Image 1 (cartoon, rainbow, N blue to C red):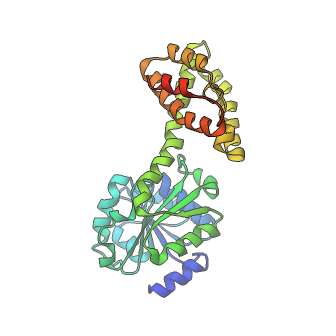
Image 2: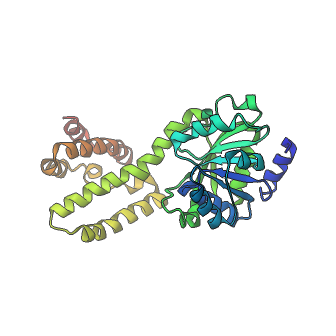
Image 3: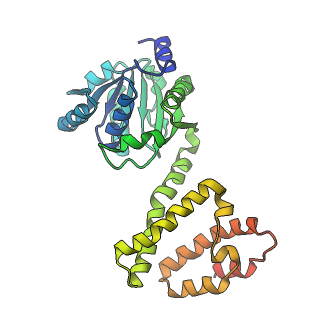
Length: 296
């Protein structure tokens, strides 16, 4: 398939470009189903475990390929949706095949397209395409992918065409550089994973107060939900409340007295973080005593 044809197919919505998936786990099956639901041509799946490829193919009404050579041959764009640790190994295999003018993509949040070493030497184009979304259900997460923010990094040749493809599906899209891929992923992990640690701490504190875990979650969830809604509607600075924002050192001190040493460190570090926001919000308020306490 020549370059002009690839550009044309991507430009007109991508409904005829043939996409193959190597890896049939949660990400590969969810993304494949999402594309199929929007009339994008997904030809099927290859996996080392053929049963896994067959399950993905059945769910998306596509083909389960028995060999990696076969799916590469029949695809214009190849999405490697294996575990991150296997992406390099897959690349080392497929680069020895005829891949001239093919698009080679992976969906890792942390890795850039540079993992496809010397890809232009083989005539192909490398991209990392990452949905900023927690895909945790192999057969249902695709329903929520229209809400996913998509980031694209890779060769400039088809970067804009891939961007238009996902924009046409209704996704918001951002092009990022390979240099910023790790920082970008750190941002995603902070709100997607670290927040779970904070919620877990809060659950533990309430259980220590006599709450059941179920009741503790019922108590905390409206607070979590309201804060996220408030941040979206009003921004970080206007959403900040609590003892740090109001300069209440007495309450901060009382909290730290009842926390174990590890949680006390976390509390102080996060308080220092939001202190800078409080200072921007309340420029006339003196936070020096709180700053001194947090540094102890």
